[in-house]
Length: 167
Image (tube, helix red, strand yellow):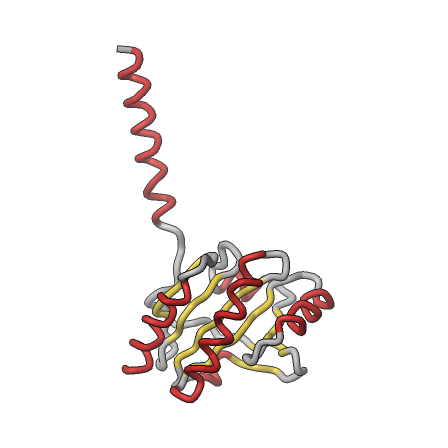
């Protein structure tokens, strides 16, 4: 009987936690928050300037090992689909601006890299873990979000990108 009570208690505990895990905040279906950030080349870029194009925004940090793996995959996607109307933007959320600049330079990606030295954009985009990638449709609505990165995620990105480019 005691084992049965323990098992029941454990099941109840897991069941009560599961909804809160599944209900992590997301922007999917909402307008992408606008922002202006300074890019690696010194220019200011505004998210709303890319309305009318499909935008992939990748939030990264040099200390997040998955960022080092994801950025080259995103660069290949950028090179392949930029003429079709895709814009890839990288946003560093690293607090050490100099080290973030060095990391970005070493990655040698072809898409714009921007630097968020505050926490407003991270809060607005509900950043949970680095890297985090979102896809925004031509109307400025977030249509897909992925937290973290593992090999193969780029295939899911491509499926969503192709769908959004056809719309």
